[in-house]
Length: 113
Image (tube, rainbow, N blue to C red):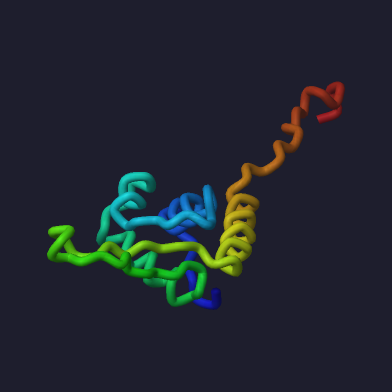
């Protein structure tokens, strides 16, 4: 993804999709599981959709029978699953704490300091 910024919110959403890449995800459920408000979630879903990482599709219902509009569900694409796994691994590596180096102790030099 050329200009796709990997934020913690994007990482949370991708992580949720990767729990089961073949599962249909509903926006409201993603808001609850990722603890992200709709004003942040839906722009993320739109960006993921434009990038080809997820595909959105409306359920096939009769709104008058159901008493509500059709819901939009999202599924991860195979390319999206590979890309998300790779990007989350890079993010994890970038956030990994550094290896602790030995602390310099002048007293350990036997009074040569």
